[in-house]
Length: 128
Ligand code: HEC
Image (cartoon, rainbow, N blue to C red; front, top):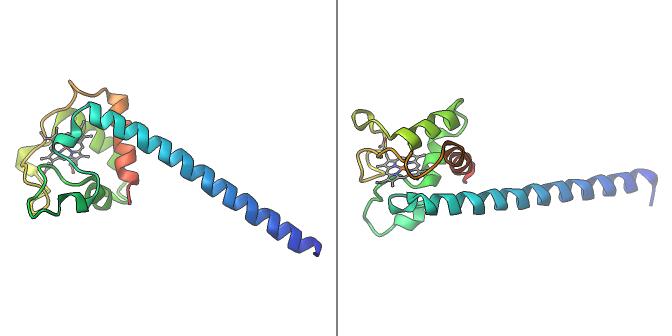
């Protein structure tokens, strides 16, 4: 083995390690967010994946994978959505027609703290 082959192997190994570490952290964030969301009653109206709602009926709230797609790359999305989760959505500007049966989301501030809401929103936005 030449020197550069060794160097390449080592850096490839390091990359793999970093990637799986990031993955494990992401799983943990997901598990925590799911627990918070379940405790706060979010799943009464929301599903995580789009497929969950394939029984022909629209879910009450949009599937969170759809939310992630909708806000992908939009600056300020996490802050905006944290406010919407805490304060509820405006029924006059509901923007999930065709994807959700509900017209507006009631405020959830009684069920979830601001920091927990932010955690769940960050996780929702990371869904693929
Ligand atoms: C009573 C039903 C209900 C509950 C409970 C509920 N939601 Fe919603 N949610 C909705 C509806 C309906 C919409 C779509 C609103 C619209 O069309 O603007 C929505 C929209 C959203 C959106 C997207 C908002 C936007 O402006 O695009 C997020 C994010 C969200 N909910 C997160 C949550 C979280 C987190 C919880 C739990 C703390 C939760 N929801 C609990 C009904 C609900």
